[in-house]
Length: 112
Image (cartoon, rainbow, N blue to C red; front, side):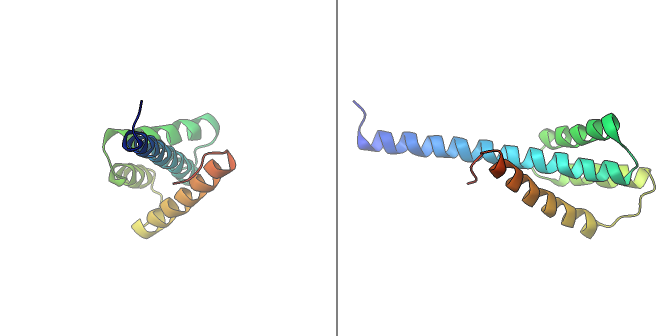
């Protein structure tokens, strides 16, 4: 028989797992949206834009934090001669995160 403490601990573990999974979904969706935005700036469309967006998502898996994603976007935009600044990219990142949260809510994923 489980004690009240064990049940509370199990509940906390489940919430932690849910919160962690939700954060992963938010970040992956945010990065995909950001990748599509950057792809558009570089003139990529259709499958090429989808592939680029997934490359941005994969970039974030390599290291924790968003810096690797931002570095990829900066490098790729620069290589294509797209004019940009860090504030523009950071602003879009924040917008994409808000959009990701909204989309996940609409799809039935609760937010933390």
